[in-house]
Length: 102
Image (cartoon, rainbow, N blue to C red; front, side):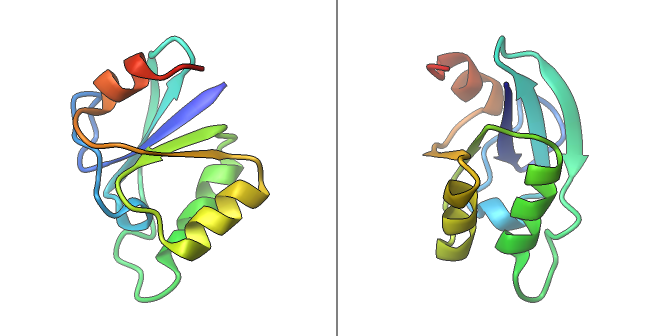
């Protein structure tokens, strides 16, 4: 299982981004809390539709759960339509993943 965190930076100690679709990075963890990848969000600066495009990007990377600050309505709808769990959180990415009940 892959868990993504919408994050402000590229390391596992980065904070959760309050704007999930425009997060600077998506940190991809496995179910054991190990950081697998740190992906720059190619849609962080998109003018319109960042949430939808970022969601498609995450779907392509096979995530099952996304932890973020705020999810726009289109992003949440698309994530839920693909069976991806949305969890609102704040703080350090690694801590949130470690506390997650998979």
